[in-house]
Length: 278
Image (cartoon, rainbow, N blue to C red; front, side, top):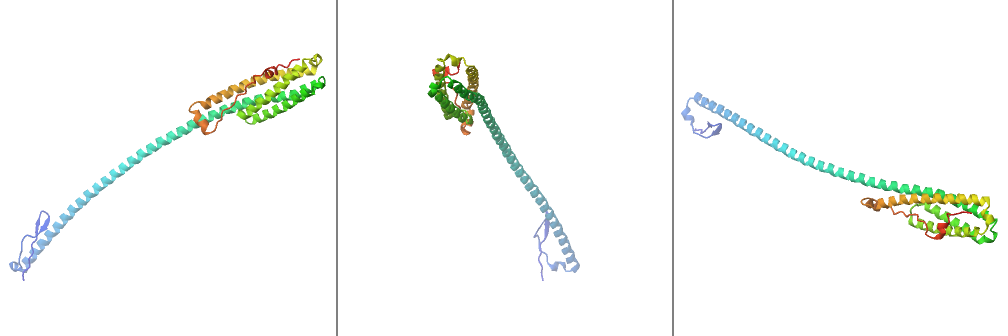
């Protein structure tokens, strides 16, 4: 019986090298010795291969770890860049919003200013509307035959008071301002007509009550004129602001309408109305 085995250890590897026969090793002890030597060689070779495999495994793990770290670093750098871009964009949006809020608040301040200016006019108008009935009542005692003129004054006064009350709710409104100006023009016309009639009655001009009412009415008209000028200045400032860029954009978006000026009627009747003298 012949057994062939070729085992050689060369450079840490096992390869077939030579055949040997059990006949060449007739003594049992010689065969066993050869087998034991070959087993020890195989074990050593296996240990070397395992060591090399461990080195390759460790090197591969290190390479993979480095690649993973590089990938995470690139991902972090990309995320950091995106975060910086997002922060810059957010800062721009916040700055734009604050800028728009500042423009909006500026328009609100100017609008409230001319509203307050009109309230000063309204105070003087109410005082004048209260004085006119006293003027009519005083004149009635001397002008009983001028009933139509006195009734026209009372009617015009009531219409003007209603128009002023409507304008007080929405100062600067174009429609309300036109209605108020028309009512005031009508009142000024009938007052001028009344003054022309009064001039024909010296005893009426000399009446103490008539003199007192006329002085108060004249003083009130002067205060109305000053208050109107202040109101128009505030309206002009507001209108200028809302027309300038970029405030015009905010004014358009939030519907800041143009405010109308209170301009005196250019008729001679209204020009003569404040001059109440007896």
